[in-house]
Length: 258
Length: 278
Image 1 (cartoon, chains in turn red, green):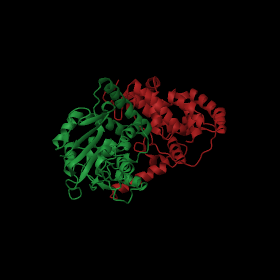
Image 2 (cartoon, one colour):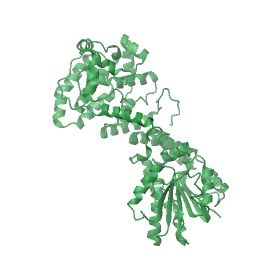
Image 3 (cartoon, rainbow over the protein chains, first blue to last red):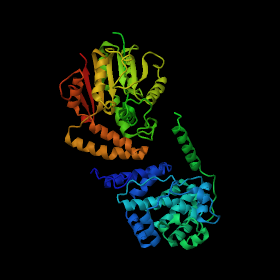
Image 4 (cartoon, rainbow over the protein chains, first blue to last red):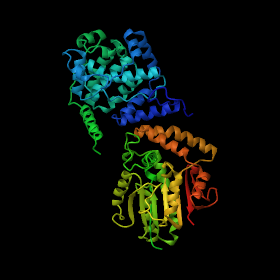
């Protein structure tokens, strides 16, 4: 029952069906118990992906932009995305909107756990791509990163991409909301998410990095999206600030303090 | 018999930390700084999560390495190696006090990892042994105990629990143990060992290689440490071989069988090796 296959890509952890099952159940509990365990949410997504990933890959293959993504396999993190340059783009462009969104929410593009439990390297990339584009989905429909906003995006993702993780989050996530938030979620955001996500183009085929200069309004029209109902934007998270501090501290330590 | 100090290794309950500290030891025995850099990331000793592994070891620790028999003649100076967090040290001191009204027994805890020692020290502050000669903590390498600090023929008891498998050179550890023990002194080592029963062994292997890293991933977000733990257990010499190594260091052991030179716990999942310096 033990798996002794060699890793197919960096970070690959081969698991057999039993281990996959244990991880799925364990990560489900852990994600609910401590949603800040990003690694557990990621593991849950990977262990429950099933046929959704091949389907998404095929959707990409059928679309010219999607095919280019599969060919280039671009990654999204603070090294591959020049945030400073994007900040200089004119107002109204997608790139500028993205940087503004990052600042408003206090997040960075660096917090995505690498894929471990998908065996096929191409499917692993599709999963990685989905994870890294998640923030773009927030940005393009104009939603923040609060719990209720995340759930709205999850419903949107489920309608648009069909990933089981999105469904799981959509079903269990609301347990963490109070009844007023739940009511608003289901009366306003979910109908929007299902409608918008269902009719829009498949988000996985969008080559976001080539559209920085595109006008946001135009982009939304092209992709078939409408803004989400207005939501309250809370104070920015400390994620970006902490990441910046950590980098500064890391450099200080490297420079000789012990 | 006056007490000399013995070092007690209290590695047991913190197994998910100690193995990391140990493996950090083996990676760089010369390096004295807290070895978090070997793994480049997590500070294992700070891990707070309870794990199945930890619970397993808790129950083994409660058998106190079977050293209670040594108190027949009272007092003991114990050297407990790789015992940073002081669990077994505490048990030994409590046992001496409760059973024999012995407050002269001393335990010196040695560990290569300063952070573990700090944790042990903090722990002992909550006990009555703090600030008494009964307990002390020393940062040192079990393979090379500084001879000026750890003299020859000093201790009545040398213990090491779940620490020796992480050392780079087991013969060196055994040699040092032999050196610092008094003639007549006892060497006791608690460690993971080989399960000989084929059915149990199969189940144990499956559990080790499948469940333990998974539990580590899920509960602690750390697969690698637990993967290391499981692999280091498999690499450790089986009972007869380890008993031979102990004899090669100059010790005298019982027969090469369960109940002689060693005592299997749970079919060999853990094992206590005992020997005497004559």
